[in-house]
Length: 497
Image (cartoon, rainbow, N blue to C red; front, side, top):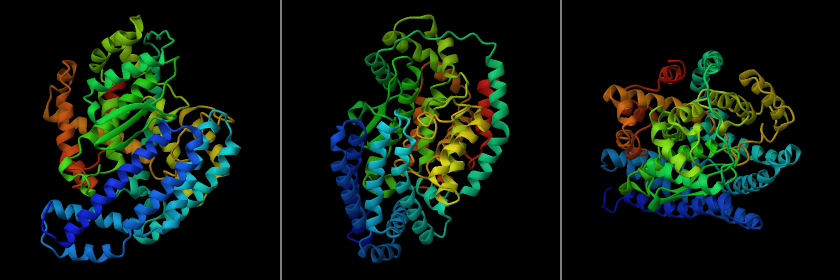
């Protein structure tokens, strides 16, 4: 970055301050979900709303408009120009929203998410609905203002915050195609797997042993424990900051795979954050490019690598070390367990083949909800109908494992869900590119040479931050734009090949 005292340098200094305040907000928010005692929630919610208001105030300082214009006229290198592009984008989004709305949304989301933690186990949809209505009302107002500022549709204005440049027309095209062939693939894989013999693991699996197993899997996947940690929360997530990554998982003593695969998933997020360029930190260009790319990294770790037949050979000794030796833990059986396809209630526990159906369902509900075509009261009936259509599962009256299972809507994260399946498509495309460049990739994974994968992702994705737009980054990394055909080919090869 330039060291001359210019408008651009003034902007860099301001963003450095925002970065440090965001650091505090991120750690306080993680603690709210992972460690904070219940009685601390109201005070923490107010504190986070206050911090959100302060960050918004700094991001909308009237002086920024002139500084951005002056910086545009300065002589800047390619990196600085990319950083300035991201600064302007952040400025535009911040100025679209009044501070009162930012604070109100933060407060409503904190209250709704905190109540959801006890309402979900109680199957209390009426109680949840009271809080959710306010979150949705504020999300619609946010969408309206962002749409007015950007010229996008209501839903696209929210989608653009998580997947810049992506539009619902493209999501409709990609998901529409997926909807055509996915149900048939699910049936074909289930028919094929019906003839396989899979040994069920015998529990219980103590939480302490599962945690130790998860930590060893994270070490195998290269996570830097001097720059992050693993804790427990009601819903697994990766938070914190690049210098201090905070991951969570959750445990059930009757099964160990959801925690293990969830931990591997979050490790992909964590390694992306840990792999961002340190010399750019504090500037918008240093940020992970998009949530679709973020999910591509978590799914590269959990699915592309974690469910790879050869990876089970590396995982099996760790499972035996922590959970004891039993026939279910042989590499072949472990891999069959990790790739078993069976429609289920819970998205985060879903297999690689049925997972996109869960995402399509949520997208087809949240988009009309934001656009005002349906109301919160309509969610359960729509959920039940779509679960029956897409996965053949009856969720009537089962709100806990139905429309209340995810934290996203409670937390006001509308526009996020498409990123999961877009991420699966990016991940399949990246691994296809790796295999073209290194035909012996699968043999190298079998030999435990995982750095081949990590180095490729670090060079092509992690260290690129937000230097390029998402389409540019995908093109540079893989040699082509987003091509969903790689995802279909991957599923067919792994499950029917």
